[in-house]
Length: 95
Length: 485
Image (cartoon, rainbow over all chains, first blue to last red; front, side, top):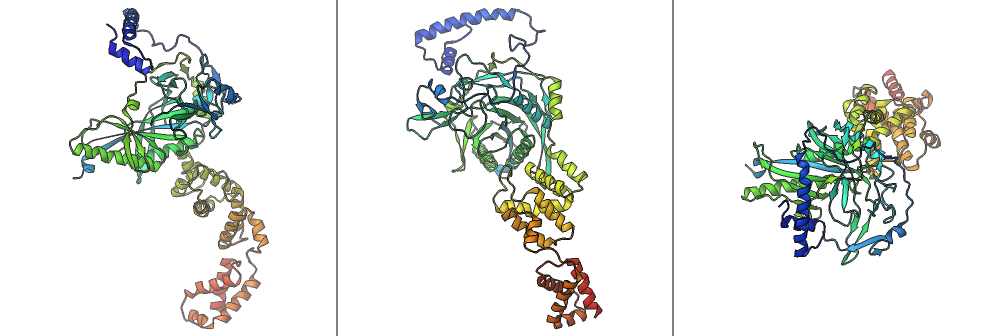
């Protein structure tokens, strides 16, 4: 196995996914298959290849440092699950 | 031997400096501080689906500027990474940062502690976006989020663990703050959070080289707090180890009211960020041409300015050091010299009366004095009046005080109050005669050899002329009268 049930639980926790035991099992099998497939890449000799961080070789797309956005707080807050004045309201964050 | 002698602290600092750009790092929202909540937000910095970040060129220029000043290697290719974590101050669920390939690597900063110079090595400088702000107190069961700060550009400046005391950490931070302000890339305001510092602290038995277990300390919002928090941690480590205990690697928060550190809840500090290259941003290519462009536009740095003050303006080292310790002070000094090119006299006034006035008005801790109580051109004019012999140095002090309150020009104040120095012999001789006539006993004592009474007579004559008499002239005429007759 390329990935353990414990690792699946850890990753699910980090991703805030609540998996039941059946889902955990299915996910373990699925990810294991994916990782096994990806292992084929290991067969290639990449010792002479620069590590690739991006698929495209693009020149930098800059923005000049100018304020271009007009604020539309109401429209943006319309997507908030809850608001309080101009604040987004979220469940209590415990420090 | 005390615990402090047996253990040696090892300290490294991570500084987050908010950059003084007009707009945010990846969108066209304003990056300014103090707007009403969520005024400076848009779909990009709120992490709405389908949006793409576009890099602000100025952020890269500022990073290179810092890197050149700190003598880092500027990476021709660096990479953007996603740092993944869920917290309501970051709507996307990840922060765009740099991880494996930061823009600046290495470099050093020279600091001075108790007159001893020390070179502190830097690990790296990288760019990232700031997070929003949470407000926890307003409601019992809920928190409020303001995303104005989310996406404001930051430089994270990481030192090697080269600092060996709280005082060295403080000196490093002050030096770095002076530098970023000279570079015009960050305002260095610790209280408003635009210049923040986390400390990595560990101790080891003196004479050993292996590093001890380190603790990260956060939540210090002044230089003093950083020094106190580090001193507290060093003492705590030494005590735990003395008692045979072990230090746990953790993140602790400084409590400024109770002057102690406390562990952050372990759930929050158990971070697993799963960094990976951000597919939304291509690798950052920094050309030699861009580095050269930034280098040409570099503002003059404190060391260069200090050297220039000594070499070109013939100031003593001490004056140059004091005047360049803050950029606005050095700028002010130069503006006064531009108005009246007598550098040493200007330096004396700026280091003396101007700094005293700032202290009295409690402006000496202000970040930049944009509204100096006495305009540079006016101070130049005042010193010119002394050099021309129009007023005495003593009268100038009175005029300076009035300039500080009324904002008037020295010439206007001198004219309005009739303070022009009297250099005509007639009125001075009259005053001398009057003084000598009033003190025949003292005149006799002087003539009997009590030379030091000359000072007394000068004082009396100055008093009789309301301080306006030209002092060298008074001296000469008095001596003639006393000796001659």
